[in-house]
Amino acid sequence: MAAVLLCFLLAAPVLLVTSSPIHDSDNGTVPLVLWHGMGDSCCNPLSMGYIKKMIEQEIPGVYVFSVMIGKNIVEDTENGFFSDVNEQVSMVCNQLALDPKLKGGYNAMGFSQGAQFLRAVAQRCASPPMKNLISVGGQHQGVYGLPRCPGESSKICDMIREALNKEAYLGWFQKHLVQAQYWHDPLNDDLYKKYSRFLADINQERAVNETYKKNLQQLEKFVMVKFLQDSVVDPVDTEWFGFLKTGQAKETETLQESVLYKELQHRGERTGWCGGCSRSGGA
Image (tube, rainbow, N blue to C red; front, side, top):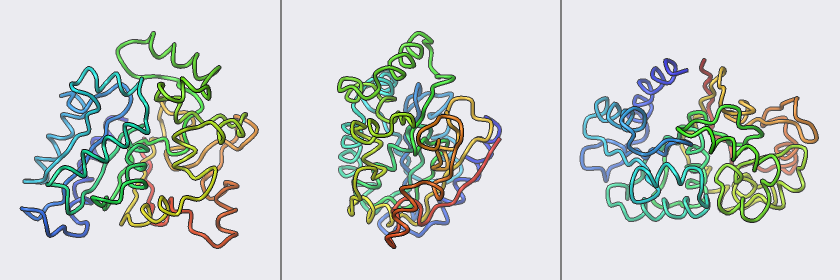
């Protein structure tokens, strides 16, 4: 998977450069916002720090903003496990709005859970405008399993698994455990739709939010990269907006096969999710 990711990242700057020009940019390049995944941080020299450096080398003069939640790398990593996702999204929206280098708009690239968090930014915060969103292994329909949780402490991962299996939709966990906030239990669909504070909201599971729909449709491109051999995300179909069929935990369906998508299509509405989506599969 690492080799495929590296190839994709080398190709990604081409997409970012060829998007519509932003005339307010000092050097003609489009700024880029990155959001890391679970167990990582904004500035790890072996992961996000390396990716940031590589993009800056591929696109001379580009401004790259790598999201950090907290005052330092340690806090940023911890907040990838224990924090309120809605508050994180609001915080990032404020950071982007206050950054003068982003006032003309920006491209965004999210990794793992950082991808659905950036989609929430696109839906909730129209200014500054997000032009293109690249999701690398994002869990856009959530997860129902945590098979190989990354990070230095396996005890933390084991604790999260146990909590999610038993109490994902209780108030404390929905407020403070990041992974609970995109936990999608197909065996308890009513509980998910009623108590999921983050994922059910941005996926319009309870009602259609016209602002969310309008803002997401402003994206020029929404690229979703799915790792076909992914051993962390379960089910892997969520990386292309698919998921497990409701009422069981074995058979999956695509976004277009889902009940909600069909209901919206029947009413003659665009979902606001994937009008400009493209999908890419990797090993």
